[in-house]
Image (cartoon, rainbow, N blue to C red):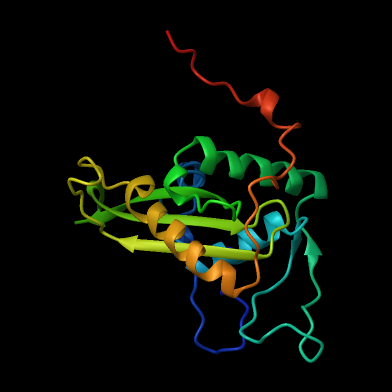
Length: 210
């Protein structure tokens, strides 16, 4: 999905990915899998989410309005359609039942994932300072828009019960933002439309209550 290359947009000033560089060894390869030693730009992340949920086709980002004058760029498949449809259901469940509950905007079927990344302090990762992110798509039953929100070093408050992770601080921003912009974008709210959960629900296990 182009995560290791500069984003493909119409400007010369393009963000690049921070990677281990020449020190890409076994440990770096393993830790990159959970986010240590690599940092992509928000536009990289948005493009990746678009690829995952549009049916599995990667298309480079553009700053131009896509219409008859500027049609969508030619893409290439990176996920199967079946994988794309299953991921719609899974990331919708993250918002309805998981860490992204506070990102939900009633009627607009948001799906996405929270992320809390430790920041570097004196060359070491520290849990005392983080960058929180929510990246998602709406409406998840018929994806049209990607949203990525990031907060740099958010602080714990009484309202977040002492937590500074993404589910407590950046997720509510997503909920309020989508609730405001979705009507302007022509997305109609619906309490009955949802992505097909049938294929993924058998793999979701909830703790039994006693």
